Image (tube, rainbow, N blue to C red; front, side, top):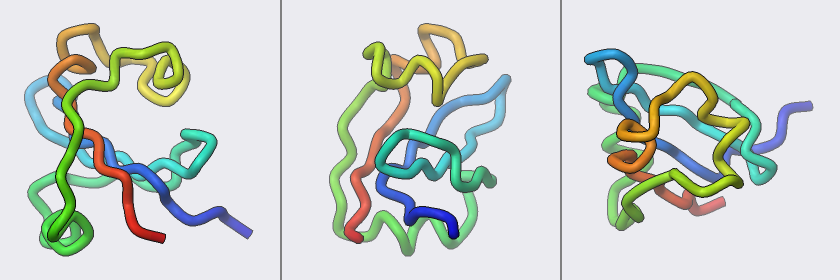
Length: 79
């Protein structure tokens, strides 16, 4: 059974913006276009923190450059 998503990271991926859902251990649960309606629904009323440059994000966001990670928006989802 898959664990529920705890984080949503909105990040640039080579010119398109994606939403990555991650569980509490920052393992990927799902990934989709950040322009989708689901993103608006899931983040309604939530304030993101800016940046996912810390070492706790290294594994989850491998493949993303330093600038992409600094500019990412991180939402903590209500479980």
